[in-house]
Length: 525
Image 1 (cartoon, rainbow, N blue to C red):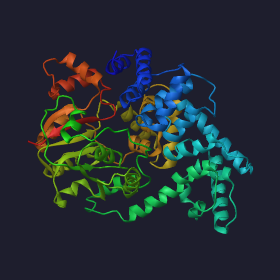
Image 2: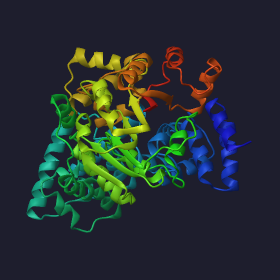
Image 3: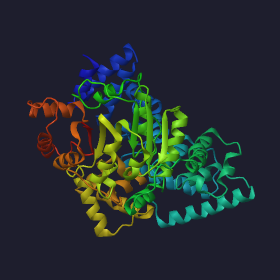
């Protein structure tokens, strides 16, 4: 059987067969395609007991980024929970903590308790050699924005520890590694007064790596942020409120890109994402990402589209500084980052053959106006990829937002922790369904999911009206092959999936189809 058939088996729930095929292909030749299929099998499964070889390959897949590590996280969690008790020296656990947030309530409880134990050891002046697990815990806590629950007495101890560390750094006194690691599990070390002094001494390799992400890289980002070009003013109160929310921390943090093959023409790149797109060249290699966040999308786009020059803009300087640092790290010199408000982008006097704006329009005061402001920037015959929240797909989010309104949780780090504490305790029922979103397990992403200052949700019929008002033609949804096959069986008269009325019926029958977002292409005539 082929690797393509293995993917089909995995999507049909026949995961054991699919993994056997993927392993045989990896034995034959460890090609990027074989790696990809293996990881997609793991991603789509809820595995428990598997051969040790499979666990070892998942460790490699996480560390070598065969796909995005967070896409493998739930599969890795299933493997960890399938062989209790949890072993703090397990290479799979360490690889997961060092590369991805942990999207699992039970494992989060284990890690929350482990963090408290590390704090207690640190304040006892236990300066024994720090472990790989403790260093990995500091990595995952930064990556999840320190979202784990903490009791009031625990936070009081953290405050005293912080004060002691700042006093020691200010006076030049030595600081114990375990105390630094414990602190790094509760707040970013770059926030310490005199934090730059932490970069001078020689530390263990474990702590050096923690200081890299906690101090060295954030200091570099501050410098990049200060030099970030500004293309437009911030338009209005809503834009300013959204900008302020995203300045609290870079959103989202990420470690690596998926491996990319040889760059391809823009039309080929788009056909890989939306099946049935016409085979016709798209003029121009100037691309725009309107709302680029921390840069993962534009850097990936710049690597994958041949000859491209990418302009990537965002409201948040915190995210842009992170994005610029990652671009330098990955050698993406064909990406230009700048601060801008997309409702003011018409003033920059540039046009593009392709525009991507995912997860942005639904946070504007008027999404239709925002889209109309982007259309003049798109050349005739060009394509725009949009990502919008689904009303049906986010029913669990709407229920959680009702709960938040009733309980009056504040949109602060403490309010988010208290809200999550109640949701984690619910364990089942409508409220607990929000834990199916990976965003729930990262502080800034949970805030975006449940506490955003501005959010609109759409239906397929609203998308149709939105595109009509902007003078754009629907060109297809970006959905997995299994979804497209199911749609084709239900609507064989629409082989290219271009009838939005059909998709409205399809989503009503399958309400989780667009649980993340609607991702779709639109074409400018």
